[in-house]
Amino acid sequence: MKLIIAVIQDKDSNRLSNALVDHNFRATKLATTGGFLKSGNTTFMIGTDDIRVDKALEIIKENCQSREQLVAPVSPMGGNADSYVPYPVEVEVGGATVFVLPVEHFRQF
Image: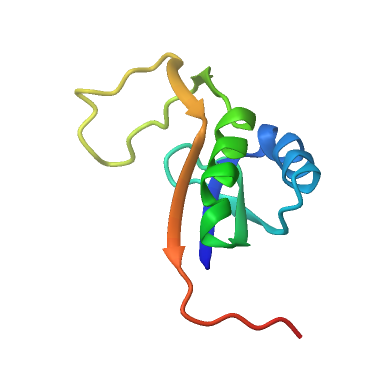
């Protein structure tokens, strides 16, 4: 058995949740916050048999799109302002960061 932890952008959360249910995966959704953009993320915890891991990863990949987004930079506070860019910067966001972990023991009550 494996535990899949997928951190995705909030915009993809409902689409991924529906796709997982359609393919009979059970998942727990957690509201999380990203460290880089300080924006909302959703973390899915999915427990599944080893043989279904590839299918779960395929569903995550199909439903979590990366996209370009303009981000207003944070001004430096007391730091070096030499490299500070005072205008919005386009960065790639979205997609999914996925961890697949072995599960030694599982029980459901």
